[in-house]
Length: 373
Length: 252
Image 1 (tube, rainbow over the protein chains, first blue to last red):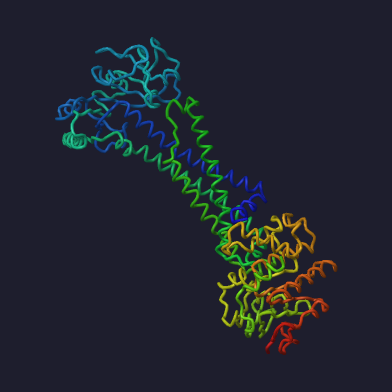
Image 2: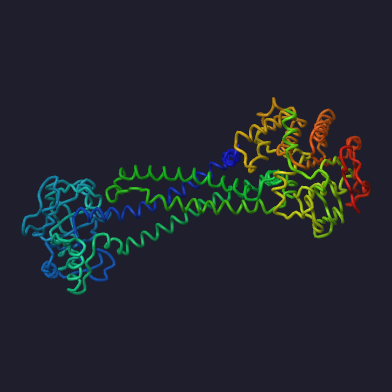
């Protein structure tokens, strides 16, 4: 018999209430983890997609809130290419366009026919556009599957009919869901003549950090441009910042609700056991020991709820890739780094939720507690 | 077994002839002074005393016991342990090591077994789990419950439950054992058994026994009797006449 045994025994006295409290914590933690993981996975998927393209730097319009929000004149691409240390560049126009049948949006990228990026496309079948070829597209395999398109099929893009000439076999969720078209076609369809959204930059190999810093400074000296690494682009992206903030807020509310479950269960339990708490005081238990026994009950509920929540979030992670509407767009990968802050927050809040009923329990004079039924 | 317990009790440090616990000018009122349970009580108990406190219902007997063990606090006056005033924060330590309490309605934890109820009083006493279990088992055997120690207390008879409560009260070998109507909820046979057990424990140790009872015959077994009426001591104010030692001095 020790404090943990006693706490377990007390929890088992009201199995339904204890079970429901644990379930409440589990759902709260699972929801918080799911939301956090989801927002981070979206960002991570975008990062993986950019890594797969293999950029050293991404050049955007200075002050652009995200990759979709900046516009750069196409001739700037040549000016960036002329910066010492720059090995190769590729302009890109990127935007969401309405789906083929009107449902949902598709990520469409326009690349110049001469861009080195076409040479890096991992074709599963078909080919990339020839120089000067128009109204053709290479589809990521995920978007091809979801649209039911294969090489030789036609599809519409902003009112124009384009022909599928290749299927790409990218590995990241973002790139698997994108449509690649000649830059001129997208500029024309989107009323963005001679404009790109960003410029991909590879630099000559040298001392990495120093070389990168110098090239960045030289590019930004061209005016109204920001040269960033892929990580920096995503970290500064306002969409991701809002997504993360919303996820964090909802996660805090969810974990707070979980802690309220602990508080509620323990307030009820200690009220029911007021007389027993008086007995413990009468046989010499100190206030700190009585409080510890109640807090241990709360923490046992919380730990069990957290385990349940983590299991739920991993089940969701296993299920999401099999849901085409989700799995074709993002990869959902819970990690220890993602789980730890949520669990710590849940434990801290549950500890606080346990301390209040524990404090209430020992505040009463033992003789008064013993008079309670 | 008896000798093991007695050795344990006798090994305890206590001031054999000096004051063990004393109330100095103690009053206790309830409802912001509307009810006076005890008024200006002076009482001193010495080590080894065997005292009966008698009085009608509502006379203040239980309040007196509550103040003697610190599960309630006086509204005026002070309580002294071995000559030193007891502060509120000292009481839990005193109850853990020096004071045992037996209640009329047992006050056991219903979800635990007999031996677990006794072990509860040993948590926080610096003993390992095996030593706690060993000592609880020994004391339960002393009160004649070695065959029932793993039973849930809800499965025990009233007399057996009270013996578990006595075992819990004495498991730390206290200097002072307070028994508040310990036979009040028992049939006559169980009551006699429990009373014999309490006097036997008192006989075989240097423990001070304070017995609150309605039962005059039970009170007569104590060398010293204090009678309370309307919150005041009306009898037993003289020097104690303990068979073993000066027992009780009710001063005032």
